[in-house]
Amino acid sequence: MTKHCFNCGNKWILANAPGRRDTCEDCDTDFRCCYNCIHHDPIVAHQCRERRAEPVQEKDRANYCEYFDFAKRIFKTPPRDAGDSNRENAARDALKKLLGD
Image (cartoon, rainbow, N blue to C red):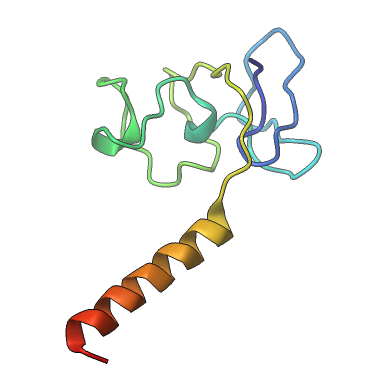
């Protein structure tokens, strides 16, 4: 388990937490963002388990959250394109079946 960029998997090797202006060398994504935080959870309110934190609209951008703690995890490539198109096709097929097309 490592501290790494949520977007490309590039490891954060410094001992301290990233600053607001620190970005990934490979993909230029902000390191200090909600997606890299240990408190980020997509199924809770405002996608954050820290109840005292201010809501953040752009989860992939740097912010001033004082509760940021870099998460240690195993990198998994985000299934953006394939998952979205499969879900879209399944919804389209269900609609056709419902309408009798």
